[in-house]
Amino acid sequence: MANMKNAKKKIKVIAKQTKSNNDYEASMKTAMKKVERAVSSNDKDSAQANLKVAIKAIDKAASKGVATKNFVARNKSRLSKKVNAME
Image (cartoon, rainbow, N blue to C red; front, side, top):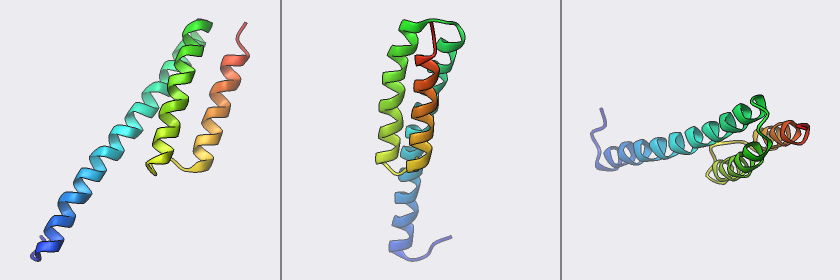
């Protein structure tokens, strides 16, 4: 356990940052899953609408440092390909 005042504060700050990061990551993953579900159920309108939301969530996570640049590019590309390949 931390004894110094600055170490105790750092523990609180890290806990707050961890919660925030988990929220960004969870919303990103949920948005990606919604696109996958819409693609698997062949609902093109829903897939396109969810794709916009997912891309926004992925970019937001990247800007907060939760997702890496390559992860962002790879997943945006994969989701876009799946939605564009729908009939």
